[in-house]
Length: 155
Image (cartoon, rainbow, N blue to C red; front, side, top):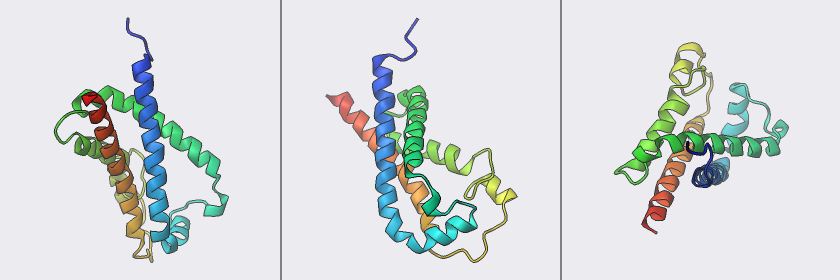
């Protein structure tokens, strides 16, 4: 019987978590100045806590946990993605379809959200940048995972 968490799996999952946290931070740093006027008003309209009430430590810990969970799931499907033609695009599509558009709960930007949530009135034009941020992070993540694993395979 194979080990539940071999050193190879643990390294892979940890690497995926690190890539997730890094790409999350990079995209957030880029998005903050672009969405400054959108952030406060949009967050409030969408039901988010005010930014000054959000615990940054909790955000960072949550991203590590999300990264570890991503690592587990990507381990299960890595053979159909890593080293395959358009593998980065396949990974991005999986993340966007399952994580954004096809969530089981009604969230803004999802199919369920379009059905069950009232549209946000007086939505600033810059709010569309928020969706770009949501799509950009998994794209950057997918490209990084694909090419880092591909270069490791060549070594």
